[in-house]
Length: 185
Image: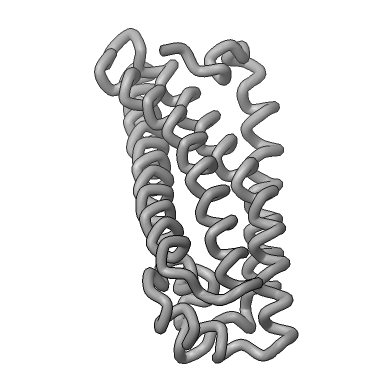
């Protein structure tokens, strides 16, 4: 169950991770700026509310709360998200693989979990693609119950996988820092 990021030599992983991380943050900032007008009473979390609309009446209320220009922003946001999903999933997958490699000799089950989460980030990206298609169909046509339910489930699983990946990276980084400090003393 090797992950492609494992083949990157340890000394060169930061050269891959750091640009991925910086680009992820930059694109996230752009998406937040572009998506700011999507936050309305009907969509309190903007595009994230739309991802979790789940039913026709809720989605329609959100769309109705956006003027024509804001709907264009929503469409742009969905399109630009295709770049974001490649970046965030790869950055988190790279970090999971990196942390996993540091645990291989002392905590094999945790190392394996990290590799599974690294693969899970690319599954999250695939789910994000399906979700974006469903939301695009909803935005450009009329809300459709099957697409909204599909988008909801894709978003739920995607956010769970991303959260688990980030949690793994945070806990693994702290564990590694503590381990290094103990080994130095």
